[in-house]
Image 1 (cartoon, rainbow, N blue to C red):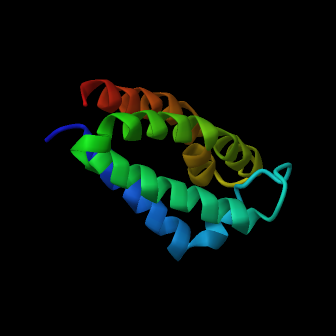
Image 2 (tube, helix red, strand yellow):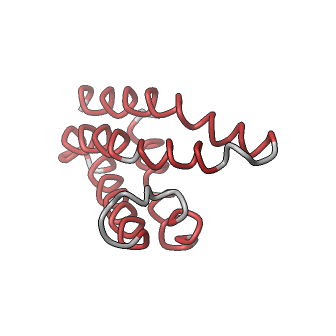
Length: 118
């Protein structure tokens, strides 16, 4: 299996999650952003869906891979926000929140690998 299929699936799944459970994702949108948190949840969900489609299609895979890398960088502030907000939770949720922080780097590298291999 090419690395683009699982990347497209991951992005597509998160895009669906933005539509199905937006309240959970609203909570991690940094308050410093202008507009409502729901606006940013919706925008990021649409972006993830578009990027998933771009990664899935061979003719747009290169740009999709670069867009995925940029998207993973762009959503990192939400990951930081989640870690800050969950710092007082029990160990398991706190481990999830902190564990997401270093996960962004391999996601960016994966997306770049897909782009360069297209």
